[in-house]
Image 1 (cartoon, one colour):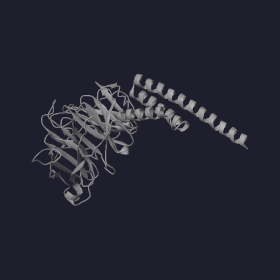
Image 2 (cartoon, rainbow, N blue to C red; image 1 turned 90 degrees about the vertical axis):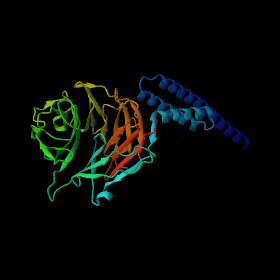
Image 3 (cartoon, helix red, strand yellow; image 1 turned 90 degrees about the horizontal axis):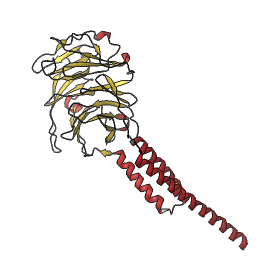
Image 4 (spheres, helix red, strand yellow; image 1 turned 120 degrees about the vertical axis):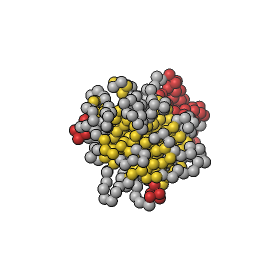
Length: 368
């Protein structure tokens, strides 16, 4: 009996020793992967090496739970991945305007454009445009009071689908708010004046219409079915000019949004961002992002920003990329149940404004 006990004990000790040896080998493999990560040429490759190292270390811990070297290395790599994730919670997010409370009716807020001293906001449900003064960007600022710039008269609806702020520039002579409706009609809204239709040549010939943007007096139309962005130069009374293709042949059938700051950026349904400089494709890597964009809805960039911002509704976050090459910079995590459909950023003030189903939100962006 004693011999059987001793034999069993020897077997257990042999298995334990083997586990210790295998755990040490796994730690060595993880150390090598950490070294490769530090030498990697891209953030994606760096992240991949670190994740592989974590797998080896978790196996090592299962083989030898007392291996302090495995635990220390695992904690160090997890901390490194947390820094690479660059995730910041928007703890300062607050509602500036609840439009449903303000109007007492159903609202579906979808458009947000900046006009210099405030914002125009599109309510698609109510077929209205709201004016909102530029809010106090301090944390203690009060809520601005919106006014209604446009609302339906009786049963007449314009069915507005997109807003464009067109500042004076190029051949365009004045600051204007432009709006396109579901019939591809273009209207101009100016202070203390009735909306007036503007000619927009060949609009019925577009294969589709997704959204529009303005830059240096020119109007740009995103036409996904034609896989093209059309460029209109202004005329004396609107945009009664021949449209021109702004981009080379490229598949844009899944394009969702468009921003222009001299370069052209397009957001695709699968989360890919395309960049074009002088009409030519330019690399936009999105290198280093911890997980793919899921149900992205909107882009933001302008000539004053160093970064490009993407509202990622599926992951409840705002993702920030370097505008020059597309490398991932940081991400801002939104509180649960915060619907975001459009956004605007003031990098100088460190302020982020967003619109959701019925609300205008503001948050101070954590430094990073």
